[in-house]
Image (cartoon, rainbow, N blue to C red; front, side):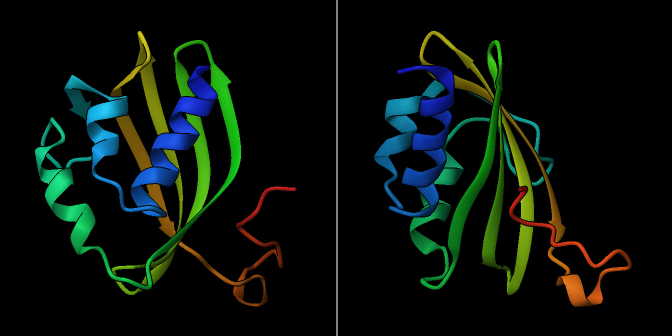
Length: 123
């Protein structure tokens, strides 16, 4: 599996299927997290995923790959009660996700945007 497919499969399995075995399949034992609200490793994530709201949904958009890095632009609906647009960045080595960064911002409808443009999807 190439890096792009691995990252997309992992994020979909976590947020759509809620499959915590994903962490053992696709994440390194030394997984490093750069989101300041989560510790390194996958143990906390394995506890959080089954408790996500039933109506939280995830939709991937643009997926870009550059060597060992994959970025996925996506929409999280009902993330802590808000719709969020995010970019998740994964570093992949030897078929495992070894690091993760993310940037999230609340989705603003085009009718409320200064420019009238949608935040998602990228077309």
